[in-house]
Length: 109
Image (cartoon, rainbow, N blue to C red):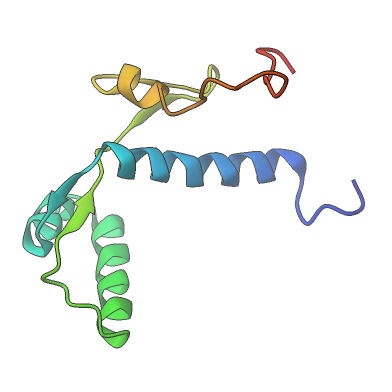
């Protein structure tokens, strides 16, 4: 425990957030810059984050007209750590994979 940079729960939650973002990306679709801005207009926080990302991309000479991926908003049952809602079943497929013997991860650890 003394070697950890954060509490185990905090590490788990921050890692899970990264995985959720990646799963949304995997389920996403190509979208133009303007379409992404329109889809984020209802959330000031998300729109601000996207605008800061765009500023960073421009500073690094990334063409904003290059198609980007817009992932869906995913809902999760945090107690079960499973996705719910319209895309729940599809998103849940990304939570694990089929492992080959002898590297199988048990259902309960």
